Image (cartoon, rainbow over all chains, first blue to last red; front, side, top):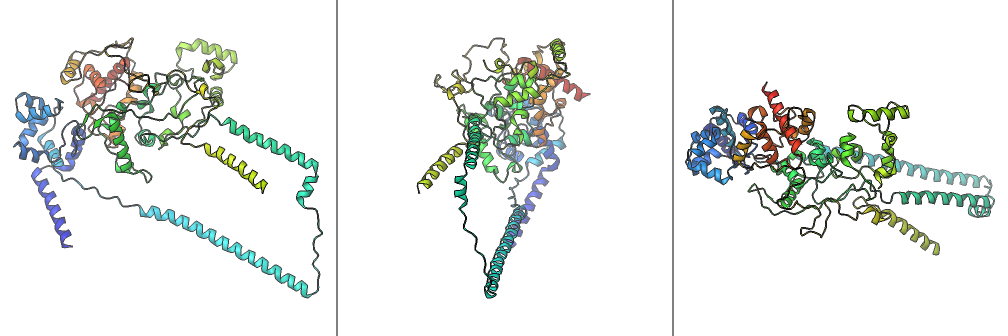
Length: 421
Length: 183
């Protein structure tokens, strides 16, 4: 108890003293830091620029540089380097000559606030309490259900016993009164009667043949259809997090869907556009099924494949290909072009690929059979609006079919040679 | 007894047929040689090349047809050079704001915000921090193009996502957003 109190008071003192020495508002500093510095600096990790936790104290200790130097550096680092300042040149070279943006607009108070924020003691992560309530509720539900079921079973058991008892007593009464209970007349068994009836047998055979044909047909027609195919990928990439929660456009990563036949697997440099600065997921990203550690491990796999040294913040040049497993794959005898559908047809990706933004593990939503293609071509109207180049032919087609809107099929979308050649 | 044996065999066959359909592996095909391409498909593994994949980089020193090399270097000096000397390849008639906007919203808006204020969805969710508003930065069409081409600091290169003409359209749209913000 006394130890705890001691610790607490020590912490309080520490926080108080640091905020006193920094003479700034750490909260205001945080928002300034996030708006201006965080693109290149983190508090505890090297990024484009150095880690900034306790930068002022560190510089004063190791280099003998004061706050005035920091003011000068932040407002005009290029000028400081030119003036021949030794440490300015050293740090500039250490970070491969990346020029820091000058911030002449930040006042002394702003800078004091930012420095106060960097001088804050690192908060130790508070262990998230396990949501006991949620679990006990679901458990309670299960418990209730089994209780009700058990009670019902008991009730039926009692009823059955009661019936047997009643039957027995009635028989005893009948015996005592000298009544004879008539035994049933022996008839030929049901099976024998059935075997002797030829009409019934023929009917059954026809029924069996038809039903087995139905199942065989069903089995044969699902061969080659991969609806629901959900392979295990080398890196657990969650579309739910990227496209759903963070709302990244499909075409951001699958950019070749705009311009080519393929919708393309994004190359790893596209992952690194964001994951250069996102090396771990937030606590809130983790789900009961997949923990934060799991997701962080998957980001590590990405770094390993692309050859990114996260501690040094540079590429090692040692890359490995990621062997993604292809999910959507049309047979070679069918031609399909993404740009034709995405750009020209203006069809949403979700029309064919389903609610990808909700999929934790990517799976094939549509059957991708010919019937499925043809059906859509029959039902979908061509977008003729604002398509001036084809106005004339669109008018002719409308006249030919006597309709206001004509479908892809009416424009020739059912011709074999459109997809098979 | 014999009947029982027959029934078990039929059941076993049925069960094995059903258990073949698993979601973690692809289904059977009728005629695999009609399904699989004889020619190489995109990203296919292949032992024709030393590194074992079908897609290869163009031979060193060659450029694709219709492609213009970008001569300015990825350095601070290159950035300054682009800022002062590089001018747009688009004339006033070929600037397509609608397309520039569409591309900007796909590739840039997620961080820079659809209005260019630096408040994209990833910034609002505190995934990526410190994205500046275009109004606070000294931009020219040349520096914007240089940044799209090579990236800058934490921002990566977008040269492989959008082609040359599209990059200019986006750069024009960025400057349009900036002038709108400055109003």
